[in-house]
Image (cartoon, rainbow, N blue to C red; front, side, top):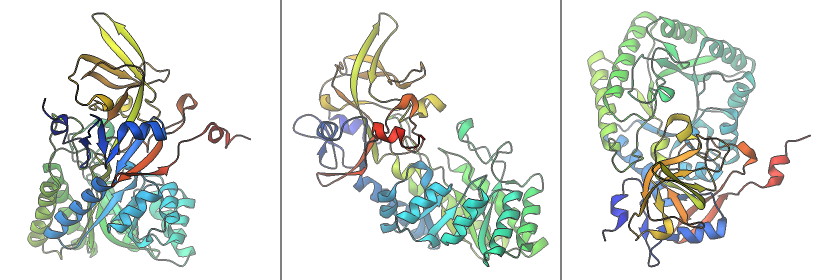
Length: 440
């Protein structure tokens, strides 16, 4: 029998293997043993995959464009241990809330490498950002421009900012994750003249220093052409702003949104291909338009943590409907991974304790929550599953935990980091007492 790891290589962590017991192992740790020791649902992050992807982004972009800062998009998944890993690997952080900023602060992350995003930052969040010394605030709208200018002046600060623009580019991804189109809640539209108005207002604001422009087209983007189109739109806009207002674009960010395969049948551009498209376009346009090449900031999130994370579940009940479907229920679901219910996200599945067995049936993996839409994986071929078996969903490192909830008063799962046959809890499992902690 062919080693199944070869078939699933594109969606499993770098250290994944089948051990002598015929079980899936990650970071040298038997996944069945992890489930027994730490309980399920359990999220397992592989240290080697995580750090390897950080280094790949830094290497591929800086080799082509030395003035590049890689900042990790915390919305994909963040805690203090992950923040410290990103600091050790030389990355910055992209935060989108006071909560994410607080996590970064509590981890001792260097604030000058933090970029604060978001379409409706409160005045309290802006004050916290300035008091914390964040490196850049990415301004999304006119209200924020006015409030931030006022707050910065009151605090005796001149805050460096980027303006988030909406270039009207379709990234050819899911409608719920497209953000750079005309009909979007994010950013100043170039086509309506709002972006030009924002540049003029920012340049005139005593409390602000406009250093650059930012776009984010959406996620996941399986093509490189939208990045080229977005960069070209912004650079021509910047040339016009230079002529009209004397604006010098010292920094530019094309955002993130870099895709990764969730299924064996999917392919996505490599980091090198994204880097070549982005840096090549940036250098070419800088020369063509007579710009000093701006500092480049990229914001990978999913593509760093996605494949590093694997979710483990324990099999419970079965429901066989002859000629229709077989449901196999697991002890997690939409409370820890709402992506399939929210936007039809698809995953592979593996029988962790039966890795060397041939598929014997087609099943649908259902969650335990009181929703018919609580389906994790539909119609997947697996060995026959029995109560107590452990199944794994690869590529669960991004957005699952970040979007998790206590629906049905479920407990959020534990998270472990594995490396060199050792597993370390980096987030404990919630308890029933945690559910009551906010009650009065």
